Length: 309
Image 1 (cartoon, one colour):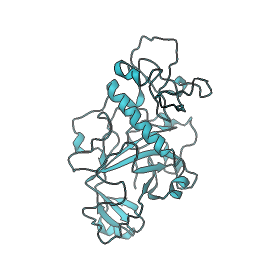
Image 2 (tube, helix red, strand yellow):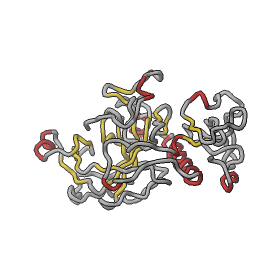
Image 3 (cartoon, rainbow, N blue to C red):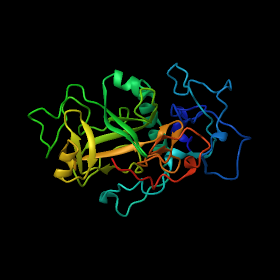
Image 4 (cartoon, rainbow, N blue to C red):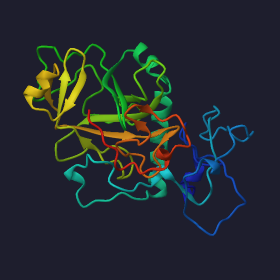
């Protein structure tokens, strides 16, 4: 179970929840014969109109909202991953498998993801992000949405930029993993009103050694070895193209074999219950995001969503 031992000192009434997927409090009639259930149904969560919906669960004097019910003796879905995370599986993970995190690692991961959600809440729409200076590096793509990055004053057209061994000074694209601040924000469309759907972290590391990343071993990072960029806009036009094909799209190939990426799907309703770190979301269709919360895609596996950047 998630609450035990030293963890109770940090969460007296319940575990602190992700701002979009919650843990605090308890519901139900007490004990259950099944000592390891997973919350995978919104019907198991607190009614947001309940007076117990908010509370100061981390002791900082501020109410933590929105919160949902954490059932004692259960394991939150984001602390248990299955599958391989998508079709970009690196050889670094050969022979490995994902699974249930220990209670201690689960709590650490919960706080890490919560930090990212709270930080990104500053830019709930694409318009908010672009007004703040974010650049659309990847246009809306099936399974992923957009990828928006903060470049500040960086430009690939700088004479010192090396397409064979690229660095991105002045940005947060570097060798430092910061769980609270994903390098990319992902939106469900290219209109200003398009909503935030997910996050992506992008970190430089050796080709044979993924970044340490999040607590636990379920965040399987992947690489895009070569990307075709329209350098003046930092806009990605394709992946693993020949130089001629990239030039036809108005781009230049950039070697990114030393850069690793991982996604997290923790923004409601864009949750991926089978693997929080999977690469793609099945309800981000080619023609736009699914708006019907009763559609079949919400229950589909997140393992096999194709895309062509």
